[in-house]
Image (cartoon, one colour):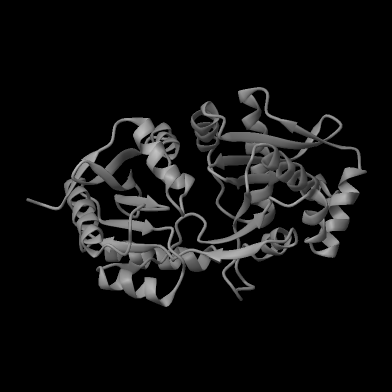
Amino acid sequence: MAKFTAKEILEKKIWKDFVLSQNPKSFLQSWNWGETSKFVGDKVFRLGFFSGKKLVGVCLLIKQQAKRGPHLLLPGGPILDWGNKELVDFFIQEIRKIGEKEGAWFIRVRPELFDTKENTKLFKHLGFISSPMHLHAENTWILNIEKSDEETLAGMRKNTRYEVRKGLKAGLTFQELTNFDDVKILTKLQNETVKRHRFVGFSEKLFKAQLATFGNDNQAKLYFCKKGKEVLVAAIIIFYGDYAYYHHSASSEKARKLPASYFLQWKIIQEAKRKGCKFYNFWGIAPEGNKKHRFSGVTTFKKGFGGERVDWLHAHDLPILPLYFATYVFEMGRKFLRRL
């Protein structure tokens, strides 16, 4: 009789209670991230691992059809005891079965494990290959927001603190989305931001999906910074567990002439504190020492608010078919062109 069994979890409460009971945890393994993925057309597998009747691990697998080949993504997971070798081996066995059945070329995994030599060695031993591309935010900046406003301001870089205070006197206003169609404003601002910084943006459908799924559980909000009636900066914030995540944002050209982005960050941090969050995750920053990375500018901005760097283990790929290596070459080229 096998020590572990695996089955699909169909009840939201069972999944949610388990994920939120774990540490670390990630909204990328939440029930609602699965719903977001389905909203944009991806196939989702919610796999639970059991020891007897006890749930001891979960993984949210997302199937994507792409020009670079069909594949499965496992962001922010799996959530299980990595010190339990038998369970880890069982997890690998089960996701490989799904990958083979779905005709995936590879499975890309980015777990909530710290970026250490030991963890890199573990994944190599498990048969994974270091991915040519990242999967969601691997290098992050996190601020503890349990302190008072005065202490939080004191912990900021001098210039950041100045810009926040300047923003509070600049006649700017903070507003929460009141009409679902307001997401079009974020899309418009993103188009402007893409032109300035030359990166591939996200679809309006994805923005709507996050606000529709997480929003139903009061776990996502769209916030604006306005000057008069004009929106200068917009951001989608996801609230999950003790964390608020600065997940998507965009700004207008006019915002660069005002401390609008500093003002919006400060207002969101205060809002997150009111909601009972303990940490504010600024999301992606550039890898340590990579000044040519396209996130280098925004990294300086985010670090100015105080906090600390948290680097998760880089994404790793489990090849299923030999066709994966064509994907590997293609993505290496794309990584160079996108300055990632």
